[in-house]
Length: 314
Image (cartoon, rainbow, N blue to C red; front, side, top):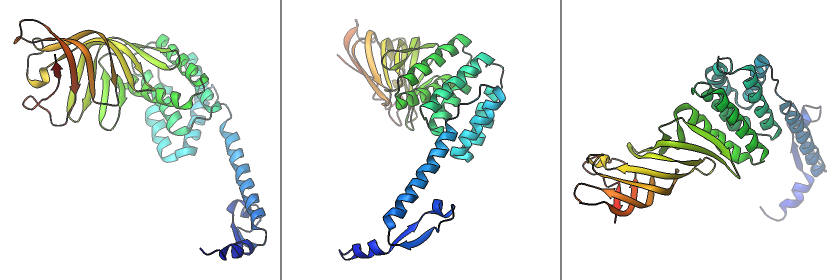
């Protein structure tokens, strides 16, 4: 636009503000003081937004039926199409089911009110939290474990890092449902056990005793047998100790050809690959165990005939 256009804009500024129009002012008009009208429009919008924010920050009731009504309305205000089936099919059956006691429901509401105070979004944060509650109710875990999880939630929220809590709660839903630690469009990591505890130092962590850690990706899979360790859900990072990998995927007998170790190792679960720097390799071809390095990766289309992993280097 040429420089001369600025003069036209100063004298023929058009204001279109439906907020002002609803209050008896014209939605569009020509004015010699367009900047002032624009400021009024912005102020009206801010006032309306403040009104909505105030309505949404009213604490949820601890009454069982009333909370369900309130949380349904809260989610529907954000996304009515997604909220209704989620409440009816996922959350309400668990909320009204036999697992949750009155005291446990109060803890659920307390965390929800913590989230409301910290201004968490209805989607995905509240949806993920309620999904985790529903999954816990059908997981077979105990009331004591539920209390420990609720305490972890409050600790993380008190830490003031919204993204940290959002990441944590998204992991919990999958963990309670089917032992999933991490899931993306291409890679899924799961535990063979639902035995774990929650802990927190500077970041949340989930502690596992002995289990098998499995990776599924690209129609292939890998597994670390007999390991234990800590999962850091906000970092998608696993730090383990001890384990065993066999060459069964390559068609070799798992009890004959394998690598094992007792030391520490680390796996970035966003990847479908991992390395262990110090392992002992066993195979009938050799008359003794070999010391070396293990590398494993899940690849598309791999089978016994063309498997190139696991790999051992001495």
